[in-house]
Image (cartoon, rainbow, N blue to C red):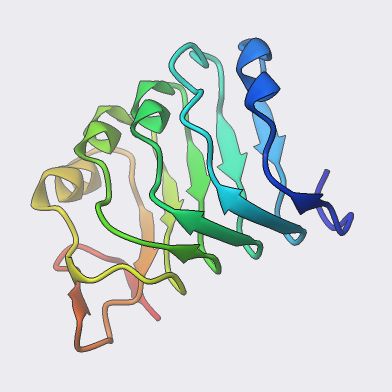
Length: 139
């Protein structure tokens, strides 16, 4: 459902789609927050909501998506905190969170994923108000 000029919010009824393997909603006009409905998404491998108008935080429940390989939330208006529950994403290979409004330091606990499969971690680490010691790409 990418590139369809979808607007509004991501519906809460999404929580009923627990067998979903890939959710591509990038390049739309979605606003509001990312709903915290991913507790039972054990098969979700890709979550891509980049280039929307999403606000708020990355939901803690995304840390329950242990099959997740690709997590792209870049180019939105997301803010701190980056949830420590993401440390459970040991299959994660790609994590893009640049072009948001995160401040402070990227959590060192999540940096430990770089010791596993996480090869592509991109953030706004060239800004004065945000730093990432383990990012592979600084925007």
